[in-house]
Amino acid sequence: MQRPFAESAEQNKGPILEVLREWFGAPGNVLEIGSGTGQHAVHFAAALPHLEWQPSDVAAHLGGIEAWRAAAGLANLRPARALDVATGPWPDEVFDYAYTANTAHIMHWREVLAMLAGVAQVLRGGGVFAMYGPFSVDGRQTAASNAAFDAALRRSDPGMGVRDLADLRNAAQRCELELVGQVAMPVNNLTLIWRRQR
Image (cartoon, rainbow, N blue to C red; front, side, top):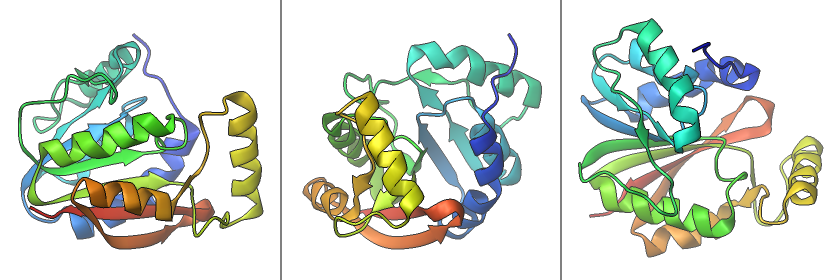
């Protein structure tokens, strides 16, 4: 199978890697939610050999992720597993870290809530969850381009849209995920860092 390619993943993998180097510093295992093309999984597993990387996505995307994994031949990159955040199945394994990029705005809100609950379920106490993407802050978009993107998403599907930091923080707190970091990224994006409280 030909490896799928997303230009956005190619462009943002470097800046995201620098954030992960800081927050995913100790050896451990990582659950990536919504691995998409598989480009991030391969790049991060190669650059962070102290981590065992578990990619996941809905079944339709697994073939592309596996094509990237097979080409990379990395010992610390596991076979992709099927995971729908709303219906599961979530892994029985406990993870030190979780990561997702550009997923919250294309999920419906109920799916975002399910993702937060699922991450809280699989993260060990003190574990870290990194969430990258566009976010609004206190009800305001951080850039005109994000406002236009949000409007386009909602025209396509009213259930989608750029998520507000306050809404995410409130929902995460109910799952015992505490916001401990907020990193400004290129192209008006953020990486939000959550820690499992216990």
